[in-house]
Amino acid sequence: MNVSWAATDVSGRFVPQELESDISDFVERFKRLRSVGSGYVEVRRPQSDFPVVTLGFRGKSAVLHVMHDPEQILIMSGDGSLPSGGSAEVPVMGDLTEFDGQFVVTVDEGWAALLEFLRSGTLPARYDLIDP
Image (cartoon, rainbow, N blue to C red; front, side, top):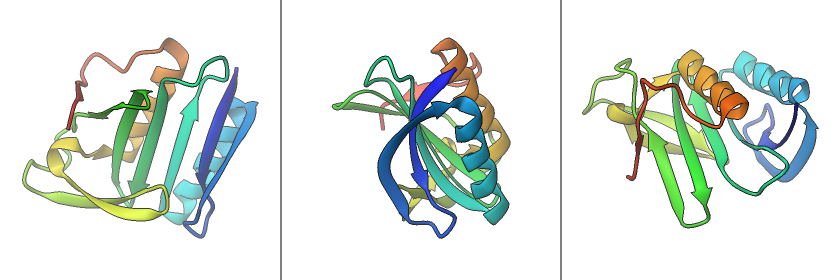
């Protein structure tokens, strides 16, 4: 499967140039970012501009957004790994952004949800998309 994607580099700088490649190249970039402990990726199917799924992560925490169109950005509900009222900073593009625990998932959960979305077009049923 081919995907269109953009990501931060290992230094944390967002590279907005979108690439189209086999999903394995995208997975390799994610693995490199994971090895340095922080990163941000945007991905979509190349046949259409939307939806776009983004995943920002730092340490063990991640936040996933889904853009159905340029005007609608939804955020995935958290998995309980960080309680509501707690917070985590994760990169969005190249900048650290603080999110409440109600929107934070583990990196593994965020990555699994992103891959499920690419495969099926939907998130795993246990997660809600919330209009922040």
